[in-house]
Length: 349
Image (cartoon, rainbow, N blue to C red; front, side):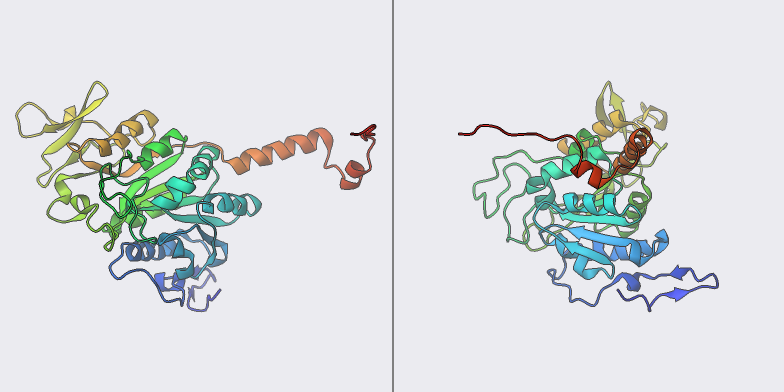
């Protein structure tokens, strides 16, 4: 791993730039792919985290996004389909000092890797999971994925997908995740902020990134990313702030019971004081926010849905080890193999 590009200050602390995290490999994504932006924002964010390259590992499964480790000048592992989360879990548990990152697409993570995804989040292993969601299988040239809209016309659904899609943030909440956020490839500043927040979370961080596949699903998120429509269709989540959006900041979200509704702040009836205030420590509110994607009259929330503190899997295991050592000592493999617990098998078939 090359580190000579980095500068050093008077305290010998390594100071990186984004270029220090770029590998010498030719990038083989399609020109214009949203993956380029995600790669650039990760490389631009890492220098601010103060983590040496020797401590960074990027692990991926199979898919366009999963070529990510090749393009990072860090340690990395291109694994098998849907199993990046499982392998990353082993890497982190056996090497708790490492900063472990997982990159996966919606097909890789929500389909063949769905079971591993759920258990990673409920265990709360201290890793960072970036899911590139383009609502299509791009590497295999355009089949509908678990996040594709119902009735979507693709090469594998010529008369429309008959399935209802997964809502990734809702699924992550149901799996008892402790950090759940969403951003977009076409909003570099916000994406860098979310990557940094994810990195600092203690436990599993899950960041869904809406990403454009300009070859097989071009414009899937243009309603939320393009200048002409973005402000009227996206609400940015900020802890302690009311949910306000719109080109003129004249729309808001209030709760009617548990039901979120859009209100006009210029109608003479409603004011900012009526609006829902975001609390990123509330799992109940996060569930309501995650349901916005299923109601076209509501804006798409981006930002941190939930961040809460809970012990990690590694910490729990370490506590168990300490308890066993205190109760029974460290043990000896020879005593175990040559102990008195033996069995004699008699008879047969």
